[in-house]
Length: 132
Image (cartoon, rainbow, N blue to C red; front, side):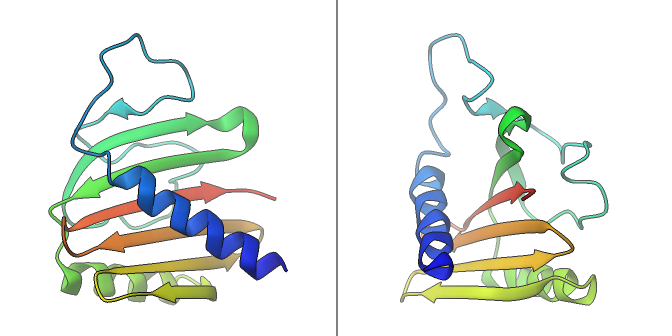
């Protein structure tokens, strides 16, 4: 049951990343994506390798114990290399969902959960980091 919920969360991230190209016209709230131009330095991203590509947006949901970001211009090879780096850091795949044009993983390490979705049609990577 937990895996089904986690896979569902990963797929939701993929859908969110589909909107990477457009930024909201309204004043952003803490839960809205904020445009970024560099890898954010915070407690959630500390110790994680930065993926190749161009950062597009981040969403700080620290009050809910989560942080999300989206990258574009990520090649499939760079995505696979980045997943390998995460596994070398001790992240273990807990679930995976894959289709012809997309791939989603749920990785866990010491209470940290990474939900990662990649779409090769737009070469986009969505990452959600959460604590239990």
